[in-house]
Length: 87
Image 1 (cartoon, one colour):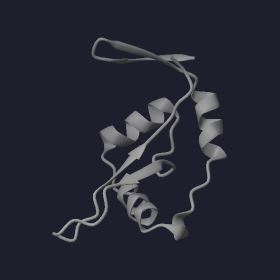
Image 2 (cartoon, rainbow, N blue to C red):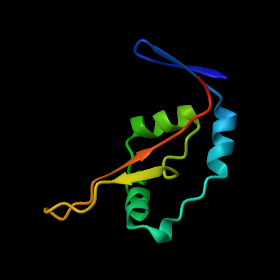
Image 3 (cartoon, rainbow, N blue to C red):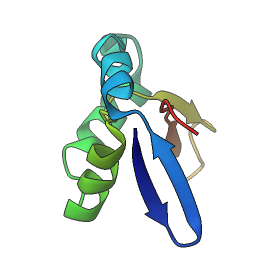
């Protein structure tokens, strides 16, 4: 277990088990435009964002996508949610 500090928060993370989870995580990229868009977005993460995901052992392109649908401006707002093993 590794302790990560974010402000006043201390989060205990099992990086090895979290990585194992993401190694077995499958994304149906071809089944959803949301996943394809999010996958492309993850290719351009900042150094800080990349480091954040690495600290937790998370593969950023493997996530659950939530979308509110197409807006009148023709945007498709989406967000990803992630899990990690720890406390």
